[in-house]
Length: 485
Image (cartoon, rainbow, N blue to C red; front, side, top):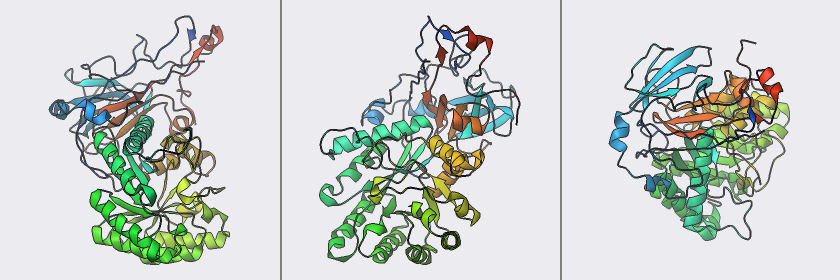
């Protein structure tokens, strides 16, 4: 079996804001997967009857493509010359399947969904056209908990380098990997202080600028200490981080000698600057959670905590009481189904009790967490994997699991709501398949749309060598397409 998965951005980027930033259209390219003519291709191929990949049948050339291994200069190298043309681009998504079973055409323009109609009802020869037959069209996921400064360091020899160029390269590569999986917005927690000072944050902010038009990357400043004599420098540095452009204030109160003092400092600074708060905590101390909810209830634009695996280790009645307090205070929880990240300096054995939290009314989202760093030597940075784990192990239905990495994640990150309806932002993910459960099970082929244009594509071709059986069985491409439960 051969699974070829080329990823390909991009057309020209367009400047935008961070979380909740503006939207603009454009159209991106496609790239065919390699295949061997000597092998018998099964019906798992993503090519149509003429051997073309979806989106190849019509529309002008989208320009050069840039592979996912491109370095920190990706955004700058693409230039701004096509921005005006991108503004005028209208893209028709033809024959897409929606989660309610309808097959529709979707017209995108100006970075938004302009119209949704029955298949064939939005004809316009002048449009760039993308054939999504066989694809499920979804609101794009977002990544609420990444660590771009430490990503992709597990395999390195010797100490990890934190030079600006290296951090920017890692943050850029990680964001592009996540974009290829479908995350058109990423919130990256970045450590500040210690011997590296604000250098890693500055590098991730530069990665953010280079990626404008491809994905929305925003930063969370994560200090280590904020209280006592040792914390004075950390607090001053946190203030500088906000001035530099960190849009979210974070940290890990569990690691400070005075967790309550840490919380007070973070919430006061967030209130002063109007920033959201996103904190690391294991959640295994009910008293500390009670103090957090009492202090954070009135803060806007809001407070998120995670990964909260310790909540699952508390007695059920204690955990339920803590969940009720979090819900009453409007504190969101970001769980990490893959496991804790290195920021907690330990790895929990369980993920947060998602069903209990949801039953109490807590808004729960899911993140990928560690991406091949000290927290986990593996990791994919794939929102659909996080959703898969919630569905397979967390007790959620497939639709609920996907909602935790899409609508709930976007809400937690302060991003506009996305629906496949006219007027909503054109932040979309098309995945080969016809139902959410199948998509979470086998999501090889994906087309990612950001600000109304194709920015990444992953195409898989499965082959069975010299096998007439595969043809005789008429195997499906990625999950059965006939009606069923």
